[in-house]
Image (cartoon, rainbow, N blue to C red; front, side, top):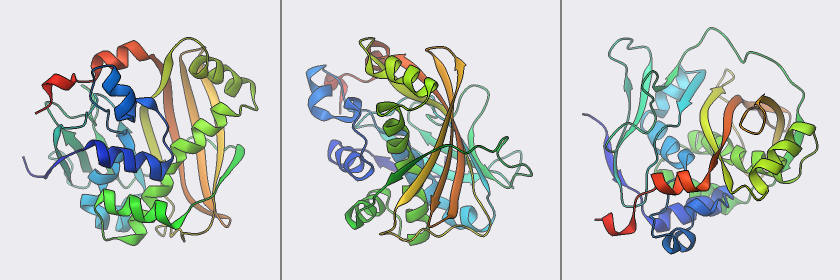
Length: 269
């Protein structure tokens, strides 16, 4: 299989989480070590490094990215990343991060970049979550992702930083649905948020985000199944320019199940 073989380390995961302000304990070596488990690689870290292998296609042709988050990668895992034409449709770029299986694919669907005819299925106003960005965050992100393409690094950072904006909405709930998710995630149920899928719609021409300016995330949550499954619509702007629109499928998974999926420390090679 073609692609780039890499290994994720604890130090890289910690630095990525600092840059994107991801505070999930599943990415914390101290917390996971106490559980006898290896650190889980953030899904956005795996996705960002994968797309970085074909930024030319993203910037010149793609206006749509669909991501399937399936199995987990742990620190110490080797993964083969690729962003290459699909065998059945060369106009579609298949995104994959393969360990023992493709972590960016389900039994029925794979992650991809492509030129789509349709845009996001709905418009929404959303509640504004305005996030400051420090220069070191962008520089750290760019180095960790391993790209020399500034435009891609700035765009993908905005996509990855949306996770922080979503958690901010949950931690500081304003709507009824946000309050419900807050009770689910931050209550005593020991449940963590988990992305099932992510759809990203990219305006044309490819958007350019200038570091040093705030990223404005307009967020709207909708309930799919009470206390279980939700959709989150996000529009990211900077100085009134749309960087991307996206739709997340978000569900709550008990921590015990996630820890069961994480790999044991004694298996680390």
